[in-house]
Length: 196
Length: 196
DNA sequence: AACGGTAATTATCTTTTGTTAATCACTCCG
DNA sequence: CGGAGTGATTAACAAAAGATAATTACCGTT
Image (tube, rainbow over all chains, first blue to last red; front, side):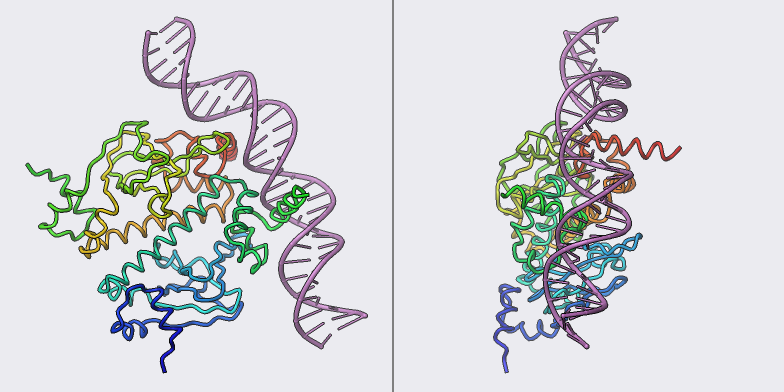
C-alpha cells in the first residue's frame, strides 16, 4: 500500500528525485516520532544524525556551568535539526535537542547518505538548499544581535515568528534573544504600556 | 609563463580539480586587488559576486537609521566574502564590504560558475566545504550571544582571533560583539584591573 | 474545591550598558 | 613644529539588564 502523503513529502524535500530512486532513498531514512519531552539528540551524542522536521517543534538547549538551562534554538516545521557540534565541529554535542510538541522528524544518517547525495545531482541540490536555508536563518539571527536592542529583537521575533510565539513558553524565547526571562517580561510590559 | 603560486592556490581551494579543467576554471575567476578603504561590494549592489580572501581583511558594515556605522562582520584570509542579502535573500545588499588592508580576493560570478560547480563533483565538494565553514562560523558567533556576556564574548574573541585583534580598531570589534566602543573600553579596563 | 507544579510578573537592588561629551594619545602632513 | 583627524579612554548621567526572591496566574489532578 503506497502512502501518497509520504511520497508527496519526499518529492517536496528532494525536488527532482526520480521515481526509480525513491525506493533506494526511502530505505535510508527513518521517521522518528517524539512526544513532548522526548529528545532527538542528547548532550554528548556523536552519531551524525540530521533531521527534517515535518511536524512539531524542537528546542536545542544546554546546561551551562552555573547550572542554568539555556535555550539556543527553536526549530519547527520544514527546518533542519542537526547538532553543529557533531556535523560541523566533529565533537560531541554540547546541546540537547528535545521536542516541545508531538514531533515527526525525517531522520537520516549523514555519512550514510553522503555518497547517495553526491551521486544524485538533484538531491545534492536539495542539500545545498538546506545549507543555504540554515545559513540564511543563522545570519539573520546574528544580524539581529549586532544591529538591534533586546526590545527590537523581541519585536522582530514576534513579527517573523508569530506562530512560535504562541507555541512555546516565553522563557525559551528570552534565551534565544540573548536575555533573561525576567528581562523579557519587562520588555513586554514596556511595549504594552506604550501601545496605550 | 605559468604562475605556480596561483596554481597552488587553486589546487588548495578546489581540492581534486583536474588539470585539464584548470584552464576553464581560471577564466571564470578574477583576482581583485583592493587598497584600504576600497570596497568589494557597496550597499545596494545586486551582482552575485562571491569572493575568497587570499590576503587582507574585509569589514562588512551598514549605516543604520540613526546614521551610525555598524560593523557586522570582519573577514580575513581563507574566508568567503559574500553578501547574504544578495546570495541568500535575493535583495540588494544592505551592507557594504570594504577592505581595511591591502586585500587580494579571488572573485567569482556566482550564477556563472553554478553549472560548472555542479558538473564538477570535486568542485561542488569545495562549495559544500565553504558553506559548512560559513555555517560553522555563523553558529559559533551566534552561540556566543546566547551563552555569554559581552565581557565573556570579548575574552573569547581575543582567544579565537588573536591576529584580528591587532589588525583592526577596537570600535569595529565592539560592534561585532554587539556592544558600543565605549562599553568595550570599560570591559578592557575591568579585565586589566582584575589581572593585577 | 484544594493542591501542586510551572510559568509569568513584579519588586528590589546591583551591575552593566547606552549616550553624550570631554579629554587624551597618536599619526600624518603641511 | 603645530594642527587636523582619528581612535581610545574617561566622566557623568539615564536607561536597561542581571540576580534573587516573592507574588500572581494558570493548569491539570485528585
